[in-house]
Amino acid sequence: QVQLVESGGGLVQPGGSLRLSCATSGFTFSSYRMSWYRQAPGKERELVAAITSTGDTTTYVHSVKGRFVISRDNAKNTVYLQMNSLKPEDTAVYYCNVRSVTGAYWGQGTQVTVSS
Image 1 (cartoon, one colour):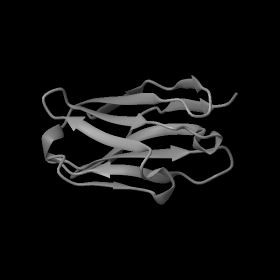
Image 2 (cartoon, one colour):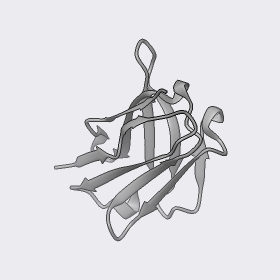
Image 3 (cartoon, one colour):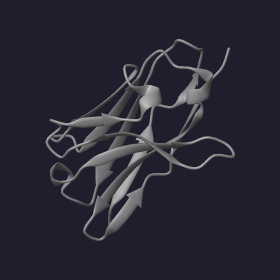
Image 4 (tube, helix red, strand yellow):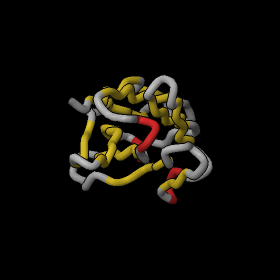
């Protein structure tokens, strides 16, 4: 079965950095676009970044452009989100996502809190 397991969240001060990882199994990772979403308290889940199956194209929500970098390692079946210059408004639960032929799958999420 498809499994997505996020890690790397935590508490960080404004201006700090975190690197999220999403380890996957149960599907042909190298064939699928991968995405990171986030959901802050009281807000809808939003798409933060996405990367094509080969990694040659990435997209970002405007609010994180120039600060976040999505990448993937197809040999390790893992997608990453490097988050720099973090702001309090980046506080949220971050989820990785894949949409395969059998449906959309989500991890359990990892909490990111940006606070002094």
